[in-house]
Structure formats: structure tokens, C-alpha cells
Length: 116
Image (cartoon, rainbow, N blue to C red):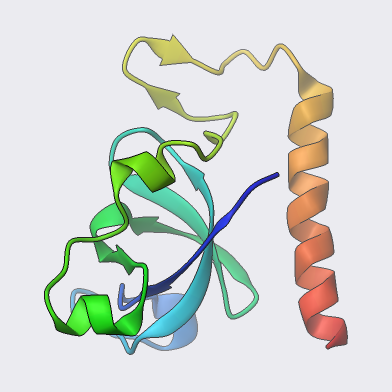
């Protein structure tokens, strides 16, 4: 499963941020992209949803006002199997083994982070 490394200042209440106010810059790993505006990211041990416009290739890009990660980069990421985008529907899940593999990969990644 491919991922993209990035940085985000999206606010996460789970990490102590105030809703609707920019959070601090944090490293993140983009796991999926819904094809519209939301990504699932791994950040500080949490898998959370963030808007694509708040995910940057580097901290410098954010400070300079450079646009977020481009469609060319993020468009290659898998879509979450339970999400719908436009006319495409991933429900009902026709390949449950892939969903299980996907969820297990996230859990393994979290487990590896906690061992470090």
C-alpha cells in the first residue's frame, strides 16, 4: 500500500487542538484520498480525516502559501473502501478480504509506532 509523507496544520481535537483554529505543523502520512477533498492520515498514532487543502509536501510550502499536495501525487492513493465518491460506490463491499487487509495494515503501522 502506497502512502505519501506530508505536513499538516489541520486542527485535531483528538490531539488537543481547538476546533476551527489552525493547529501546529505536524508530520503525517496520507493513507487514502476520497477523490474529492478528504484524506485519511496517520498522525501521532491516530488515523483521522483531514481536508486535502491542509496537507503540504513540506513545512516551507505551508509558510510560503504554496498549494497543498497536488492531485497528481494524491490521486494515486487508494480510496477508502467504505466511502463513495461521485458515481462510484464501494458499498456493498464486494472484496471484504481487501478491507480486512487494509485495516490490518493500519493497525500494524500503529503497533510499530508504539514499539518505537
